[in-house]
Length: 519
Image (cartoon, rainbow, N blue to C red; front, top):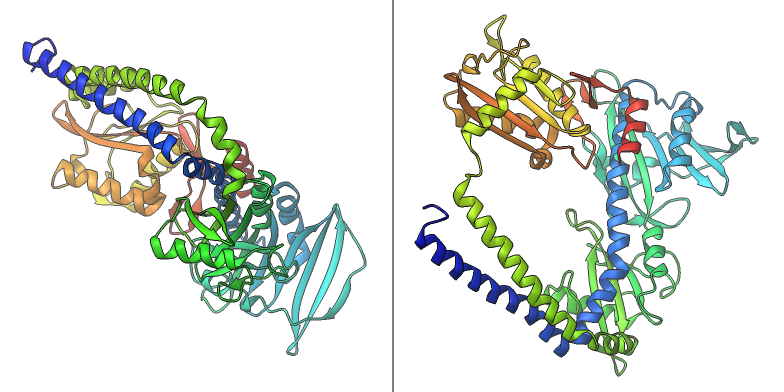
């Protein structure tokens, strides 16, 4: 059906009217509801405003911290981190403490029970080396100004890193493990830790664990800086139903809901857990006063800790009065916006009838133009997806070769990978890979991306196959990823960027600097 046919014209105007009415209802309905439920809406806005910035900041910091853990893990794999001479690690770890403000502390520990802990104390850096000799533990503490150390102080110690919540879950895993919120050993402040491990030697008998601490006190302070309201209360809740509420219950400790002395917290937690009110505001009565409450997860994926905000209704009355004066303007703006969106949707429908989403002819023309331009920082050619043409057999090195290119595109500025094209820009097809069908080729590509790069990065990659010159060719369009991408292989993980027509692996120190600058 063409866009100019009478039938399409009738359906176009019908759909336009339906969309206009529907979008007007959607736009005006919430405004009408707002006038009836104004206080609820204001409470949600205030609670979200007081938590969202802190949550987003925490999640961004978590992503950066995971990257730092991976870099430190590679240092350990390379033998650059060792507890035999802990101070030899200072030149690597001190810059992370000085420059990475979210990093509260760094631990390097082993399965023998030794550890080296680094944290900031004012303008100085404090190190604590815990050693074990003849079954006796002792700790040596130094304070550093730049690279100059104070006199060491040595004392008996009860600290054993193997008893900390970040140690054993990280053993035997290449992944980054995140703890639930807990109280740090030395500073007695609440936080979370990201950790990973490395096996030293040919067996898993001796392992080294790297751990980076992140203080939740910064998140808590951030929420209080936003001042939800003069009389609001803010708490941090763990999934084991332990609550942290400094200023309400004495001491920097997590208490069970039953043990907290604050009845408001118990009421809010009961209503939230009973009615599944996650990320929604709700109302309750406490001491003859109405309160608006909300709980929001620190991390929407792991969902192991929540920030709870409780605001007395009297604190919201001023905001409600201010909102009533703009109701008419919002209604008119909603109708205008609905009309504009309806036109946009209708126009999109016209375009969808005149041009398909994926046009093979356009794709072929694009491939030919790419072949004329040749390989560059944003273009790469590979003859096959899995078969080594010299041996005629599948080779892992062939797969890793083009996966490096994909990782490089994701870490740099994006680009296009053509599979089935040789170095001379000649179309040879991927028939040598002997896939049963084009769908099988696409499935193999998808599986390799998930295994070596990560399924979560598939959203940045669009892979298709098509016939050109009677040969099957694969085209992968890659966008720049928001997060750093590490290529997993038998020797560990590597970080690649595009440099000219090649994918270059960055050394650990350069990779860390590059990740900082790109974020």
